[in-house]
Image (spheres, rainbow, N blue to C red):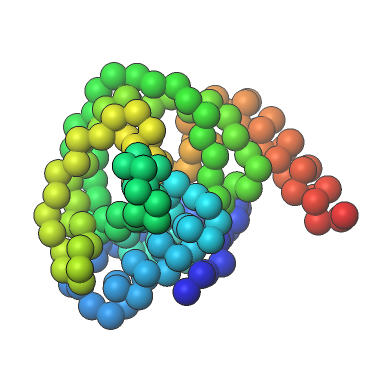
Length: 174
């Protein structure tokens, strides 16, 4: 089911999600909703926080990296256990429609998680680089209550948010 994406400054976006203790119907439904919502909004990733659920679950559009259309990956309790290098690239976020800017992140990230496969949780360790690493880090930030705007210097963040809010107001008044 496609769910409503929470838009900044919704307070749930700043909450730290709690770990998933067991695989149950709630988690399976959440995983399905994350994938449906991510695809419906043409995102590269989506966190449970972004649809109002405070569980450590993220979805990633893996087809972007494998070339296989509609391939999604759902990770439960993901955490970055190692990172290195530096990469600056443009990021956007479904919770900030239309707001894009360059963000500096590690180029390589190693993520440990439980991957949902065929209704089961399978332990995985993912070594990701480039855009895949960026998406994983962005979504893991979300479940930790961290937003990509936090990577901007305070004055730049205020400026970007002011411009973005003005754009949002203009869109609503049309």
